[in-house]
Length: 130
Image (cartoon, rainbow, N blue to C red):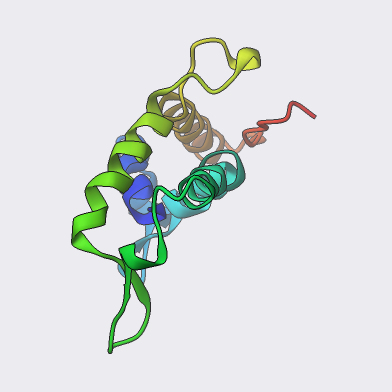
């Protein structure tokens, strides 16, 4: 999930030349994953808990593989991505107007790129407004 979202926001960073400088490490989009960490609780954790608590995904939807790790079964991936798209495109909350998570992540990517390029302070996304 994090990997998919990270690759989704990479164009915002690539367009600003950020991936050439600091973005790809060990075959993973490191800068994009770092940026996504700001959205871990309000987006990722909430989505995973919703899917588990409402029993949309169950233990039967996962498989343990011999090479290690637990993975979502192919047949359950469609269910997951339907809910992922819904979470990414719904308005975040009243304090953000009609902004959805996809737009907020892209905005933060541009802010981060600008802060690095211009050596200015970066203000992370704050879901709770504190």
